[in-house]
Length: 504
Image (cartoon, rainbow, N blue to C red; front, side, top):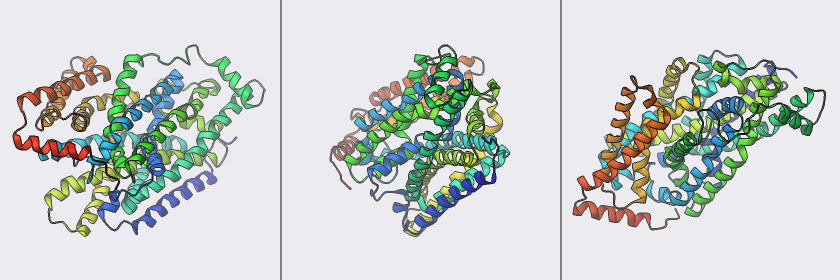
């Protein structure tokens, strides 16, 4: 085995980038309007949309933070990852068809009708920082992997990764992102099935044996006690419940994922897409995270607590032959590029249709197309800049918990009114704005108070606080600001639309 990065590895990575850019260039000729650029023509097959949804639901951040969990705690990483299965399944049952019927121009355009145009505009402006933050976590993860795996300075790893993602998304829009997602899915499959085999061989060699069965026996004999517990340490069942809740809110209301529901050819396809995602989310985690668990046994030098976020890159360098290191790094790029490309396109969609189009109301299709591409570049620049800030602020903090802490403040006040708006008719139009603004305000005040009482800033208490506050404000706002006759008529029309099947 060769644990250094060779010319062949760089060749694999260069070929991968060339294919991605080539796909973007190909679809750049096909995206003639902003509708095609954003997938509003509803022409995407369920299997391609499902693969894209799956690829958008994780990134190199998953390989980094979940591998750190797997190395430290063992099966906990699988438990946490499996939370996505019921989260997406619930979304498929109750929201898939509703999102397809409600979101026609952008993932949040229905807010203007269901609630108020002012809330739609505020949600766009508030949702943008959330998307930037989410994307920055993912870009920081790929920068960490590439920085360790290739020996690049982390600064340049982040900058180059971000620039390439912006380039092919800028050229080809959603269709390019979808095709690249599928290609990247195939690249990841190669790594997912190869790396566990090599780790088992490494384990078998530890006592002079051979074969996968022997390697697995060595693994079972040498893992620490409690390594297969479903929970451990701070990751108890209460934490799991809160993590599930946040995953549900994210998978149900994240702009690019709503976009995947809305872009399918039919309502039946929207549900089939979600079922495919659930199957992939169930099968994948044990394969993905076994190498990090195995590394706890075969790595001769234990990884320090402050270096756990680099465990995946370290174990890859320990077991992979020349050429395969490049394939793994390409897979890491695949995971992040697919997720970020979809997010960049969805964010650009909102910026174009909910911000630019409201300013330039007489915009021609050509001007909207230019605005779509400019918004894509601006999104990329913002994400790269925020990633640099996070790089220096991160320290040795657990990335999984760090991301959950950030989302616990903003996600419930943003996501709960979105979901409630398509499920419950009784909530008044102005109650949505009350819950959105009030929930975020309470979260920010609590975060500030957490400077004196740090426990308040924890993921669990903050999620409970912002979620309960948002629900209370939705109900209270309904009674404080009841709908007028004209508003009731608008809501009746909105829910009549939600109850009417549309096939295109």
